[in-house]
Image 1 (cartoon, one colour):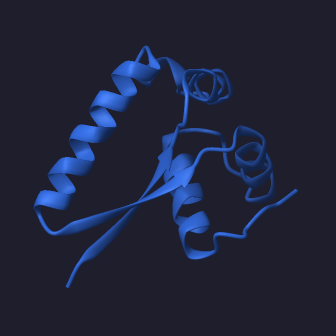
Image 2: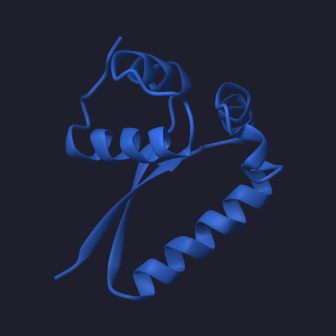
Length: 96
């Protein structure tokens, strides 16, 4: 059985930097989009090599902040994981 893992996918540098700015743990995220992308691609290759599958969830900072507010959670790593999983289960999910 193939395991599906949802991951928040930052589609360009401005999108990534916006998430770094709005997340309370942004300083702990990779310093640049290029560094994040290299790490993300490495993770994907590792998971797919182990017969897993990645579902990339387009990162929308405004929707993420609304989701955090409506779920009473701080914008951090755990929230990003939960948000990606929520979007994977319901692609049309949007708070706004």
